[in-house]
Length: 166
Image (cartoon, rainbow, N blue to C red; front, side):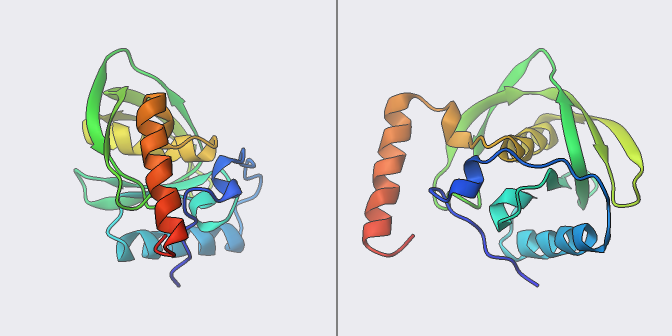
């Protein structure tokens, strides 16, 4: 089942998310519905708040292996060097900006089988993971922009809302 994407301005996108204490059938169903939703929108990542659930759960596409990875309660250990990449977001459709992020990170997470993983993420995969984990902390990619650039985007979104095309 495809889930509704919450768009910029929805308060759930700014909420702190809850740690998942038990991996049960509800969490599993949500994760698989998030994957279906992400694929249907040609996304490369999705986080639970984007579909209305304030939980520490995200899906990231591993570009190298072409598979979706379900991350429960993920945490990042940042790297040292940064890169700039053009980012977009399912919750802020139609906007793309160059954002600086760590080129290499270490990620700790649990999977649906309650197995703990520690992986290194590089390049674009690292960017995707950081973007989705930001969602779990109430942060959006436009928060990295200058005040002026962010205001320009917010004004454009307001126009789209007024025209009922948001």
